[in-house]
Each structure stands twice: as C-alpha cells, then as structure tokens.
Length: 299
Length: 94
Ligand SMILES: Cc1ncc(C[n+]2csc(CCOP(=O)(O)OP(=O)(O)O)c2C)c(N)n1
Ligand code: SF4
Ligand code: SF4
Ligand code: SF4
Ligand SMILES: [Mg+2]
Image: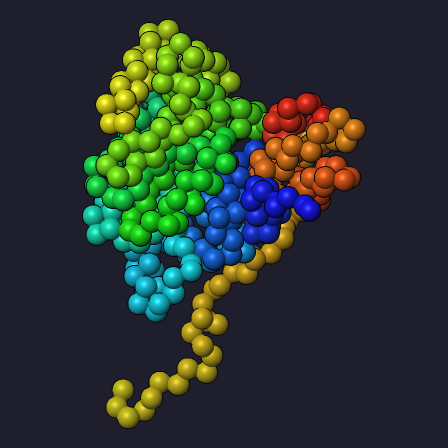
C-alpha cells in the first residue's frame, strides 16, 4: 500500500502558473504556493497597490488560478470585508477571502481600514507580506523597515526608528487569531493557514518576506536569510489565540539567548546593513531582547 | 428612466477587464536567466525541498526519476541550489 502524499509539495503544484513577473528569488510567489496548498483555487485575493499587483502579471493574463481583485492602496481590508459579507449573504462558505497586502499597504497607508475590519471582526484572513519597505516604487522606508536599514529615503545613516510591530497592534484589537510566519518556513505557514481557515472572524498573519532587490542580497539567499532571521531570534514565530501567545516549534529553541545565532550572521548577507555601526547592532540586540521579554510575559 | 428598461446585451462581467490565468504571463522567463541549475540526480535524496521553495513553481521531484526543471520559465535565482541539503544542484553560467 502506498502512503498518503504529503500536502507539500503535492498540493502546491496547480495554482501558481510558471512565468509570473516577479524578480528572481522573490518571496511573494513562494508564499502563494503555500496558500494554494491550503485553499486551492477556492480563494479570492484582494490586493492593493504593491509588488504583488505586478507579480501576477499584466492584463489579460494572471499568474494565479484563483480570483484576484486589484484595489486602491488604502482599501484592501475594506474591500475584503465587503467581499466576505457578500459571500456570507449568498451562502457561499467554501471560498476563502484573503487580503494580501505589503508592509507599506498595511503598517502605514492601510492601517485605518485594517483596524476597522478587525474591530468589526469580518470573516477573512489578512496577510501582510513584509518585505520591510515600499519595494514597488523603489525601496522607500516604511513603518515596518527595521532600525539601521538603508533605503532610498534613509540613504546615509539608515533608518533611525525601530520596526512597527503590526502583529501586536492586531492582538490589541482582540481578534480571534493573529500569527507571525516566514517564507523560510512553509510547513509552519501551512499549519497556521489551516488553523486560520477553521476560525470564524478576523485573522491576521504577519509574514516575513526577504526581498533580494530591496535588501541588497543575491537572489539565491531568500530562504537562507528568512531562516537566519528566526535563528538569530530577530523574527519570532508565534500564534495568538484564546488570549495567549503560543510559540511556534521553529522559534522554540531561541527562547534561550544562548542558542540564538549572532545577529551579525543575519546582517552580513544584506547590503542594506553594509554601513551599520557596532553601536547600532547593540541597539538591535536590545530591541530583540525586549521583544522576547514581551513574548515570554504573554505565553 | 420611465418605462424603458435599460437593456444590457452582455452580462456586466463580460464588459469588465477580467484577466484569465495563463502560463508565461510575463513571457518566457527562462530568458532572464544568467545561471542555470543543473541537477545531479544520483546525489539527490528526493527530499522535495527544492520543489517546495522554487518561487516559479518549475521543479517537479519524481520519486523514481529524480528532479525535473522547466527551463522555459526557470529564472535562475539559485534558491534550489542553496536549499538542497546534499548539494545535488549546481548553478552553471548559461
Ligand atoms: C494612494 C497611493 N499612493 C501611492 C501609490 C504608489 N505606490 C504603489 S505600490 C507602492 C509601494 C507599496 O509598498 P508595500 O505595500 O510595502 O508593497 P511592496 O511593493 O513592498 O510589495 C506605492 C507607494 C499608490 N498606488 N496609491
Ligand atoms: S522587489 Fe522584491 S518583493 Fe518586489 S517583486 Fe522584486 S523581489 Fe519580489
Ligand atoms: S533556479 Fe530558481 S527558478 Fe530555477 S528551478 Fe531553481 S529555484 Fe526554481
Ligand atoms: S533539494 Fe536536493 S536532494 Fe532534495 S529533492 Fe531537490 S535536488 Fe534532491
Ligand atoms: Mg513592502
């Protein structure tokens, strides 16, 4: 007797069509393959202006065998709310509505509509894919750009403020489900989407997505860098439900600072941190420790 | 509008710009490649990692025959070579 086939990679084969318009090594279609493993063609992506609008390709083609609605920058969560309610009215309950927006479209310009949708607890999944800058318009700083990173609008000394923690903002909205994820951990993302699929109400996933173009690294290292972010403790994978933080398996070892790789390992691959000073690295370490303390307090 | 009803000959969605799924929406993306992934199938352990991570969805790992890559669309990013735990994939200049 043959064993059942694992969902990854078998379920991720059909939906993403080869030949999309993403740069080589782009994290976006990598994550779409995981979405497709969970929902197949039965998903409606609501995409505001961002790299993803380009990645799906120009009219009359579309790289995904799924429905996509392109919407104005600030409105992803508002449109997704409407689509989710419309499906509910029509009794369609096997199609997943997903707002798929960048960090600029979420942490900055889409924040008001996101907050509104979360407060009204509409039944859809909001995924913020976080490439830590406005990539589509040429690498401008966003609220989610990390401390010390070069962008075209922080050109000399890098960003002087820390990253906005959107997942924590969403937890403060008391929604049923919030999670962090990373394109480096597709099985973890798969499990989180499966859980989110079963929960009614508003779900938020903050997806770390290293971008070779904007972060200035060789496209072959997208996965390596995504993993290093977790292994250095900089990016913490967790889920929030039932009023508690549940640390994900991949991040569990790094609760112990001694087991984390040095932050420098992560920074050294990325041209955007080329001019970072030792004092700034110390500041990043302090920030990482602060984040872990918050996690431990809410576990 | 009075008694005259508005007559719509085609359904509304036929007159909206709706894109359809297609392979190669950005053309033959294999032309972008400067380095080509070359697989040594005798080294390959069929772990599937390259297929899971390939952003262009052009790798198929077949348990019997090994790794197949669709070079018409492979963009040559090198991720498959980087994630392979046994270095069965090598990037070679085009
Ligand atoms: C209201 C409005 N302001 C500005 C723009 C221009 N614009 C298009 S995409 C983009 C950047 C989006 O950044 P992000 O949401 O982080 O997604 P990314 O491109 O990084 O994937 C900007 C500023 C726009 N389309 N609409
Ligand atoms: S700029 Fe970055 S996120 Fe945007 S398409 Fe290119 S690789 Fe992907
Ligand atoms: S080089 Fe990149 S696009 Fe080509 S097969 Fe490998 S992972 Fe896929
Ligand atoms: S990652 Fe390497 S060992 Fe695993 S299936 Fe691909 S080529 Fe084979
Ligand atoms: Mg961005």
